[in-house]
Image (tube, rainbow, N blue to C red; front, side, top):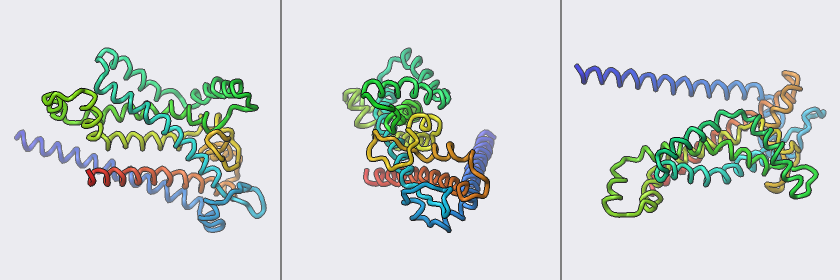
Length: 294
């Protein structure tokens, strides 16, 4: 009876998991179809290459000039820069909490780090505009301290908790036998962690990077307040720019439904979603190749 009960429970849990996964996939597919339908006139009129690689954003012109290359580059500068700053800090903090931190200290640090995820993004943006932008203006004698770099710094603070929480969970999921074997062989704690545990947990840690990159790429308010919102191709990390989410947030409220401007913003949203999906697929393919090679 016990084994039958366990089998029934496992079947029920598996059915629930499959149902949730199916519904989630269908919702994502429905969202993509809806956005594609709303933006289809732009794709058919401008073309994929003209929309993605065009350098002019004048949707109210006749005919409209719609190209989002500068916004795509700004998005990659902001999200990639945030990940460049946050990844070493997040991984280091996760390794410390999972393997080296005394329990009382870890019990204090974990809730504090998790609490950072609950702070609204507009608060981060406000603090960045009041402190970070002002610091750049005074320290470097700039007319305005807004830049893609300032946005990346704030985004890095916002995504670090996601990297820490998921990376620490991945490290703790490594089978304890590896730790016992390392201790029995007399290897140092540092060697055991960096050469054995981290490679075993790399899939979960890369998954944390994917989550953080998606959050950074889709963040709106903090980027809107710090990036400078300049519709020109940024030449460096320290230039101003207008990432895709900021463009949608700034202009969607002033558009007329059904207009070319409105449809173009839906096309921008579709590009943003596909960029996040492409990053997820690319990192998963990289992980599978590393595992086969290992």
